[in-house]
Image (cartoon, rainbow, N blue to C red):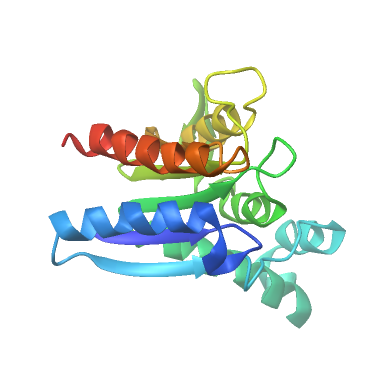
Length: 200
């Protein structure tokens, strides 16, 4: 097993989403002692935005790119190769204003590339990153699971599924801003969700 942990919080190691993602990884490694782990902290090392210059670089044929354009595309290439090299992804996902953090959105924009991680066919789009198991470590201050206010999970299911990653497991830790008792319950719920995901 090759695990890629993506931490998306701006709070680094202090983030509840990172804490839950760490717990997921710990359980996976306990069950798979030979598993390897790569950690990418998007809070500490954020990926650049998909702006006009980046789009220009991506749509310029490789042999015609300027050194600056080649360097920008190489940043995205590195993230794509990283995903391709791992069979298990653990994403630490805090909720910011009902959405995913910009750090995570930039990572998604970088790895979603036509002809590389997905392609269009006569019968519709086809994801090229299938065969990977994905765990979403979802940390929220309030409680939004299975409500219309949860825009994160539908979005992540859609975009990751579009890339072929449909083996998705949601680990919810909700209520951290609702007092100590609710925070304790959040950790209990996350542990229970993880048991279900791992078939414990």
